Amino acid sequence: MTSPGSKIPPAVRAEDLALLARRFYVDGPWLMRKMMHFRIHICPFERLIPHVKPGSSVLDVGCGAGLFLALLTGTVQHVAGTGFDTSEPAIQTALRMVEHVRKLGLPAELGFLRLDAAEQWPSGQFDVVSVIDVMHHVPPAYQDRVPGLAARSLKPGGLLLYKDMADQPFLPAAMNRLHDLVCAQQWIHYAPIDAVEEWARQSGLELTYSEATSRLWYRHELRIFRKPEG
Image 1 (tube, helix red, strand yellow):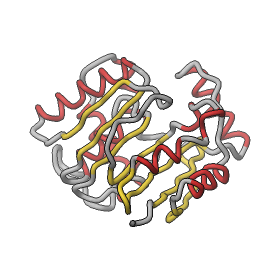
Image 2: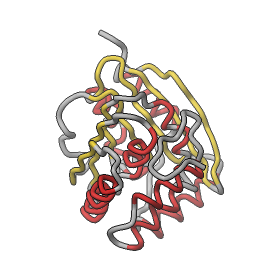
Image 3: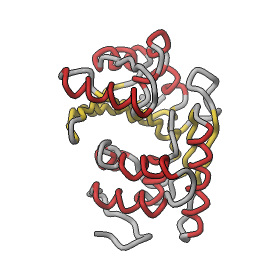
């Protein structure tokens, strides 16, 4: 186990990320904080973080309470992150997290905005755009636009980190649907992963990494896309 405040080595471990989440989220609504602590045991963040290089600028789409950017701050040197989400309570929790991280003496070049994914995204281009467990919350009529918006937000050579819940097999997909009915009070709409890959290709992105993995009763699809140079 890494010592508090130290950098996790490249082989990131889920248990170390869980420790960081507990240390970073100590202020704000109790339920929101506990969701951040527990989400480490659902989402395989340790499979995403190694794709982010030191010194990267990161745009986190649908960032929630900023957990992914928080974990990057504790594991990857000199990351500058911008996150946006439609939930005002989540954004306020993210801002409290940043204050606490700074109190711990860690650099936290993080900013958070309350925006809907259908609104204009923050300006500028980034080394990394992350879309983690967002697509199934996006209305189906809008889902095909997300990869194109991500591509426009990427610098040449930049990476799109895409992770979403799998629509198959039936049981894991149904369990996640129940999860979102209870936690988000929303009937979700899965985007088939082959459709996401095609939308990304049409947006000029190249698929460089593909993985499917399970955690508890949840099934995850991970894809890394690269924006070509020039």
